[in-house]
Image 1 (cartoon, rainbow, N blue to C red):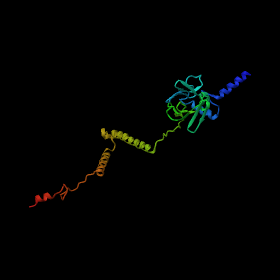
Image 2: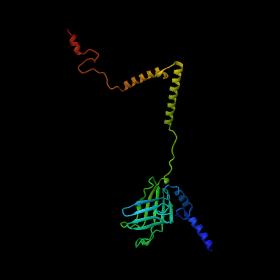
Image 3: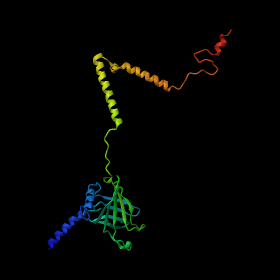
Length: 252
């Protein structure tokens, strides 16, 4: 009979334990927990400081050793408190967060109805895996009955698919560049083989490009030139013609 009870206890225990956290078996909860075990931060211990306390937080692990069931330890002056244990854990998932709660910690002394301490860690999307934030804590100056921490986890961020497709403008530039390169390379080979070109003469249709460059320069000069030739004040003609002083000199 004792053997049967032992086997039954082991079966039940194995059905409740997922790695370091003891969580009641549920299909959705198991899927969440299995995904958490793939996180880089899983199984590690983080330390966060407040003005009065130091918190050692284990992510489904004990902050001190593998045999200890304590999950979060609060050190305040010369006193330490267990805020939750690995043998009683609740796991809840929302749309953009996961809440892991450790229960069955040390009892409060004459406050909070003498309940046992519990602490929750809210996992959200983010890249600061070591920046554990204290959202709520019980200290000598702040008599809260609950503890709440927040931790950013990159694995919770949605996967952004990269768009590797080229835009229409990029494709157009690639085609134009390819045609220009083919024109210059094949044209240079032709000019070298057919006409024995040397140096700059390798450029195909060189005279046409020179004329086109000159025409483009004339067009820019015409469109962008700001100065205009106009008669100067006191003169009847422009600078190229006769003025009033010339008439005075030539008069009898």
